[in-house]
Length: 400
Image (tube, rainbow, N blue to C red; front, side, top):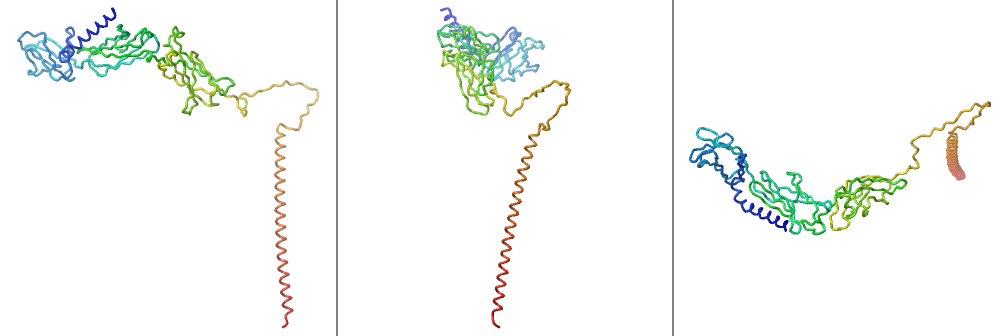
């Protein structure tokens, strides 16, 4: 009940401020100590000379220059349809030019609704932040609170001016519905923005950290992936609230990801990596008990290549030098005539013999062809001679 009464009290105060905000928009909110006055842009603003005596004439100056007398009335200065160009230092003076009062005028807009966003990286804290949807150009403060089942509690602002607040221990299991109230206040009034969040749907862990990918010795299709749970997922609550991890991987150049899932474990072995190819690996996390909560963002991409063994045509990178001791022998040492390259010489001689044999066979074939052609030519010539002799004999046998 005390919490409910406190919440109702806050709402009543806020309501009163809002009711009077229409009046404040067109009037001046005065800070008597610093002589700073605030007014609404586009409205009518009246400045009053506090040091003047009733009925005595007053001269107004704006940034040192005299203001036309038609804007003054009974010691007051009236500004119509105000713009930013009218902001500055105003001063009022008596007939002798003595300064009576100096006023700094600031113009802006009354509070407007703000855009609120919240995120919940674990079960114990909700972080909310907001940005203005309309710039007021005036000094602004915020009153922040939240309500669960009608009970109001402050949303703590650790750093004033950062537009952030934190809800601690939001009774995650008793109720998933939370009302968050951000009230914007400036010299021209106040305005409250209230949103409702569902903690079960809002829960979204931070991405896993310290992702490492190692090749497995002797296994060209395997990669060992290790990681840590997000640091914001406190270790003291890990046993009660385990995480599910989803790992995805692909060879560089592919558009398709393969997936592996595990609960609680912080390591997985990829068994079907593409041999010799560089792979991309990422991991994300989700609350294992609330499957409709959000997945975290993917971790940073890590690239790794499976184990690659020594290729059969590769020679060792380091040459092995064997040293043999020398002995003094009383008898002469006979060396063989075969040099280390004798086998190469033998192979070269055999190849030369084969080439010579082929050349001889070609030459024999050419000679045989020439002989055959000559023989055919000789036969043709003999036939021609025989025909000529026959013709001559026939001509001689004809009587004259």
